[in-house]
Picture 1 (tube, rainbow, N blue to C red):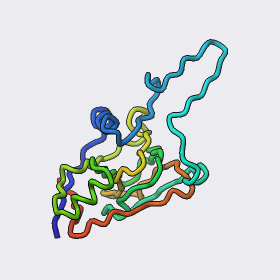
Picture 2 (spheres, rainbow, N blue to C red):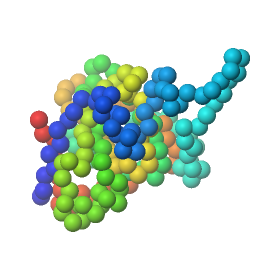
Picture 3 (cartoon, one colour):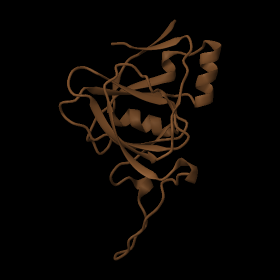
Length: 180
């Protein structure tokens, strides 16, 4: 079994900006120039950041609770989902693992035995922060969550299509292991 050692990094603005520049997420932050609309006094405007495909199902808000110490649901979704990291104070630390690789690139590296820890970033997530805790995970971006430490199970919210589904990654001879 080949081990991929993952070192959690505290989520910060530089990491999130890098993930967005790589095309993996869309950050949702107050007063973001890229999302600002030209609106005149007395007007109200709305603009789409993206539109889901109808086959993803109706819009849904999902509460997620996890108490797993391994990335048992690592995989991809065929549509976007929004992470709303509104968390409690007495909960375990939540880790979010994201692959820098596309779904197909990840599958190829697993098959050829070339997968490395540098193909991932493991985030020790920050809850309740307007600049870090709200973002869109783009479709087909391999990711998964686990938690560590003591306390209540970690919780957060996602919005996604009601029939979105998850395609789990088969790591074959690889095992994801948390490092220091």
